[in-house]
Every structure is written in C-alpha cells, then in structure tokens.
Length: 82
Image (cartoon, rainbow, N blue to C red; front, side, top):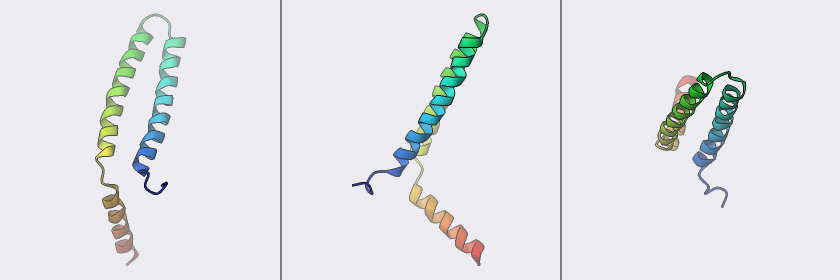
C-alpha cells in the first residue's frame, strides 16, 4: 500500500507547505510592521504573485517524468565513473 503511493505528491505537498509558510511570514511582517497603506499594497501584490508563480511551478512539477530523470542520473553516474 505504501509503495503504491506517489512520492511526487508527497514532495509537492512538503514543498508547498514550506513555501506557503514562508509567504505567510513575509506577508504578516509586511502588514503588521508596515506604516501606512503602501506595505499593505505591496503585500497584496506579493501574495498574488506568489500564488501565480506557485501554481505554474506546481503544474510544471507534475509534468516531470521522474523515472526518466532517475534513469538519466544513473546513466550520467555510470559515464562519469568510467
């Protein structure tokens, strides 16, 4: 059962949690410690950009053929060992 679970989803989930924690901390500090409305506008633009770039990178990550990547690294390792 555990072997049939896609490791790509685990990696994507881990990376997304770390990324969104970083985004939350950044936006929190911009809004909490900023004076006036300018930091709030910057935080909103940052959030929109983070969401867009994360969506694009998550979709591209799911398109990667991981067995091919592993096979390529194995071939490169055997070539460099010779």
